[in-house]
Length: 187
Length: 143
Image (cartoon, chains in turn orange, yellow):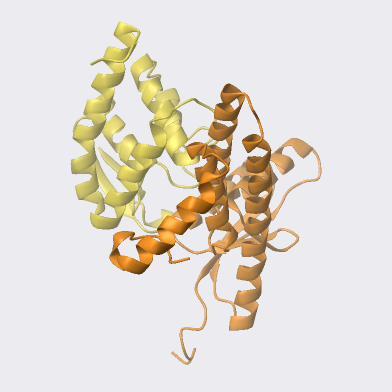
């Protein structure tokens, strides 16, 4: 058509309105939307990049809104400009970045815990939390890798002095045999 | 009987189809539609927004079907917990199997078409049923 280049992707939008009272369904819907990592475009209008799964997830929320006496609609749309889409994507990436940073801070606290049992249970909790954030991460910021590395380090329980050594070995290794470590970016 | 659900099935719909065929209607015939309005006349819709056999009050469609058809087999309810967590991941149940099963069905949904996913996942759910049945009987993990 006359849309020009494939400038923007398709998004699935949920428009919804819920009665102010009772507030329980309102907060239940809001919790669900937060968990899905939606971009809030304006009051009662949220968006996710369109895919079979995201569309279905928003359809269930729409159903919940209707069940609670509200009105809801599901739309497929394209931002008219790439700038508008970038803004949306940046906002979503920024929200995830903040969550990853909070997770990294929590990992640092857990790493300082001497009791191995406490640390093990913190690790379980942080892994779940990381998985939950990654599930709603549609535009991965650099913080994603940092958070993964932080949780990984907590799992490996490396002695503090070992970290620089490891890094040194990795550098040497990657210089000599670049194909040796697939999946790891050269430092 | 004819049953209809949304195309591009995933864990909940695949599990529902298995449940329907094994425990409700062994001659069940499944139709996959793109739009709820395309459900053929006389077909029973499931896991479609607006349908009775769908998500309700926090239940996934598998749980709704168990309730509507009074299926109180504890093994099916254990499978319901796994399906619920794989589909909704809201920590209502403790089901560590869920993320693995989720990946299996997501992978199939990429490589296979709906009818074939039913054909392939049927024996998988039969196996899960037997595993859960033995686990419940033994009170521990079956070997």
